[in-house]
Length: 163
Image (tube, rainbow, N blue to C red; front, side, top):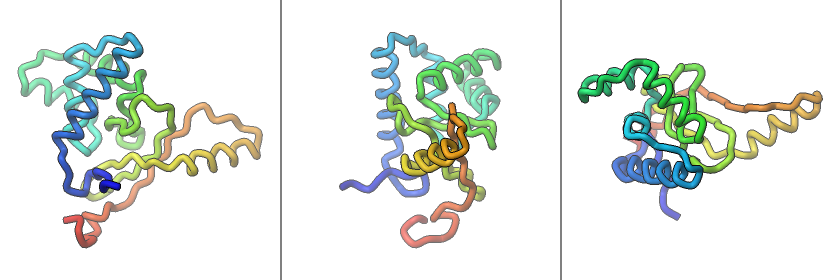
């Protein structure tokens, strides 16, 4: 099995960005949603950084490219991307990161490196099931579960092979 592309591990980043955009186009086509050029560019900017981006970070990047986007334009694009499951909002950072499971119904669990700022979306359905079971034990019905775990990634810890 090929090694999973992780933000702190060398990988073909251009290919992962291209794949995310291709997936987004396919998802929007299937759902008859309009992935406008600005929405696609916002998604691309998010994917080009493994660090979550805030709306004003995105606005500044668009400005350097000559786009005359205003904050509402960026917020509308982000709302669209959230609605179609193409990005996640990292509440603790008030920022957005690309969804590595776009098109699949899932609940987000994120590992956030306090040192370098990289975010990794963890594929851990058993964690979500444990939260749902614990909630059910107290007759609580979760409607949304997003977990954010802060710590340090292997590269920042100086782990061998992650430099």
